[in-house]
View (cartoon, rainbow, N blue to C red):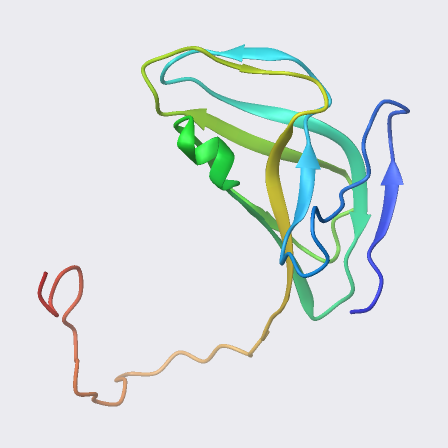
Length: 140
């Protein structure tokens, strides 16, 4: 995918961009101001819609600067067929109110290729060295 088409839905919206040429993610900006209370989660508008080519997906990820403040992003999959406004769910995991200002960089958008295999139900899966071991089965 060479070009990501971006539509501003609001004149105050900022078009996502990279801070540095080789950054993986495009910075997403909040369109609104809100004081995020401790333990509060909320969808923040970005004021943009995007057109992702088939065979790719948009993933909304944390920014390290937000993580330092105790803010986590959630639910960040943007399918290629979606044309609505990009929203970013932010959750305040800290014990302090976190002020989000309009224009703040709140998350980053990664565009990645995906596989879309057909599914088939089977009676039994093939065996593997790991087997059914999960959640800590390989040690600490």
